[in-house]
Image 1: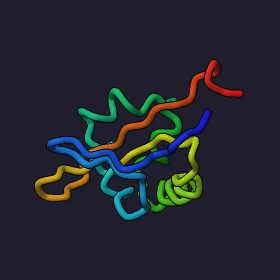
Image 2: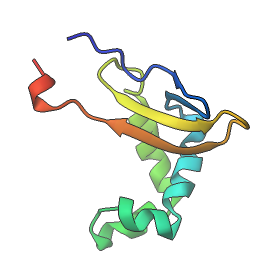
Image 3: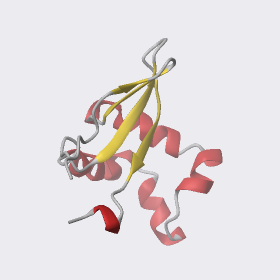
Image 4: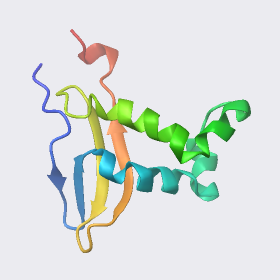
Length: 100
């Protein structure tokens, strides 16, 4: 199977782009909104304190970016077309039945 990776996708209102380090802090800030992270941060409470500190999380995001352009990685940052604001991210994974 030939994978295309996280190529840019455009809709009427949104642009989905391969993630870059540039918008990662904004995405982290979105995750730190209590109404968002109560559904997203599914880590044990003892690890949550570490997530609240950007200086600690920045290293995680930098490491994550190392594979952002691989053809088998499907993670996009979501931007509003009208003003270029980053509003979130979306990802999908390859199921076991898709792997060789």
